[in-house]
Length: 198
Picture (cartoon, rainbow, N blue to C red):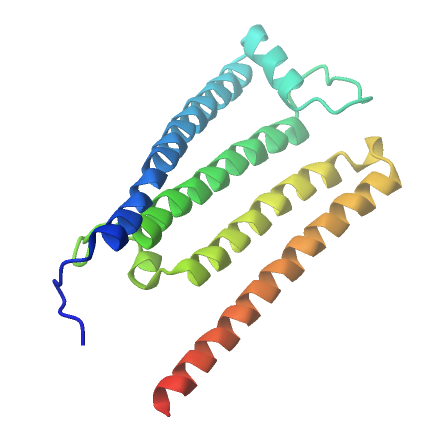
């Protein structure tokens, strides 16, 4: 049986150390997160400015939610506000996805964070592994896809039936993929438990 703190031989130690090459990737995702935070506040500022009657903010909002081949609205209406808010929710959901990839990926593939007992430890991090992370990411992608599909349906009149069917089909593929990932994970977990019990 291997000692818990047994020293690795040089080659295995070097290979194991190469996991730190992923660190710049996660730091890069943190920078991407900063870009999303900035984008969120720019959009929110313009929405508030448009509500207060700022013409520049109003035009920016109209351009942001503009759909190809659709006429721009002349004033701020409920549909425009809904589309902007859905865009903000989309940013938040992608940001949540980034957090899961950064924290979960670092914990799974690089090094333990030793957050046990920390009051702000994410609930899902206590049992995170590669399979759980894949399932969480699949669910987040479904949420993001749902937002995009809803935005398309709000402007359904300017899209062709082929486009609507294609986007719906893509969303269904995401759903089926998530179900397949969750089912595979369940089978793997049950097999693992059965092999342990024997």
